[in-house]
Image 1 (cartoon, rainbow, N blue to C red):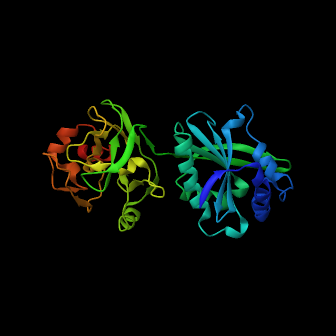
Image 2: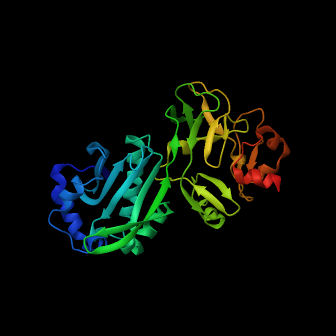
Image 3: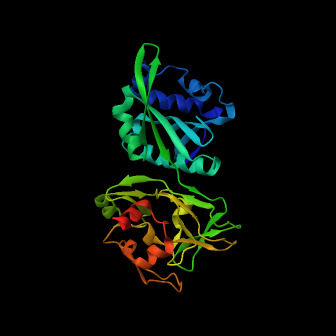
Length: 326
């Protein structure tokens, strides 16, 4: 499947897609699809938003338009993109196309709009039974904001949802690593203290994580006693390629942010100590980082080691820091 901006030649295909799923239009407008809905989708945008800040993306499979996405750049502020619509062709429901399309949207935003750090959308209550579970599965969380909604005779409310996106320093690249497989490398100088990555993804329980770990790779950090953040893997973000080192050159400054522990030169491989972010007791991995401080085996209980507590100070995932103080 591929995704690209819709052009004028695609208007008829967009109209056909909208008409193939009349229930969606009826739930959010109270009416069946109209003959000019595709044109309206391509043209309508919030007042004050520049024309080039709106893009309508089409997901194509075998040359057929199977999903359409309305996307706004810099709305409500420059760090956001707003998803106004994600609609799958009616005869393609239940095949995973919505989730695949959403993954392609994330990739598009990361490639084309690097300043965007969060995605935002609104679910109309009359469509919530269908839409809300889908967006929660994609990692969105309700913000608690509720706004009135009206379309002609249809009166309802919208509930806002948001999702943070993974972010990596622009001077990072994935290359073959001498530590393991592929790793994350600096392509230009990065000063000590600079943010190198911000992690995001979906939250799972320890039981769910245990199941996921049976099918690697799984990129994860501990958030709380029974809560873990799992990074997306399709596509796998650049920042997920960071390898472990027992003498890392990055460390944690909050629950999801890694900063440079020391100055990094072009060609340096960026590493973190997995023991500072993993608190699953049964987890362990063999280490071949080559550092003079190499522990040989890294575990989910390394947060208990006094020498590591002294070495890293407060630069741990907050949950592991809290465990040390209990």
